[in-house]
Length: 115
Length: 111
Image 1 (tube, one colour):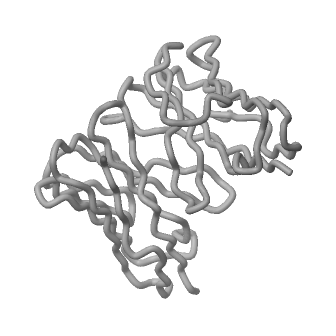
Image 2 (tube, rainbow over the protein chains, first blue to last red):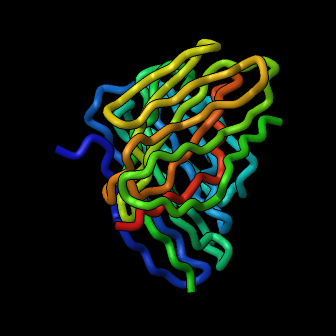
């Protein structure tokens, strides 16, 4: 059973389109995250939610909007896609509200390619 | 701003040899340090979460130490095996809910 699953695994789309990436965790964790792997391979935090409440909203374009219908799901919707949005996006979850004492569990990533 | 730096960026080690690499972080207001192992085409997998100065954790042939006063952590791999080939990430947590990742050390074990 996959603990943190994200779909799709690959997403190829044209500039200007709107797309969503879905994430679900079955670990019973309270906190979920979206990370972006940038061009230098760093994992950069985008958003985090704790029990459906937004607790981190990093400086990302407002074309990116997370949605958490319940604490097991955190979806990422991207409007008006741009070439620079091409990257690998990772969903993660952790037990605690703050990732101090508990590790993150990652999904397998979604490789987004904008043409 | 929490900057987490890892060195070296890449490392080639002969099978059977032991190796280690470093994660550096600002020592002020330190809360926790994470180590993750990231194999190609897979997702990062947690190895250790460390919070106390002088802490040492071990999982099989892999161990890690933490020095919060001087701001560094070492990851050691004893008797490297080909399956140890991966990128090893460290991440620092200093509050405000943000875990900040280093760039990783890419380890390749040569058979």
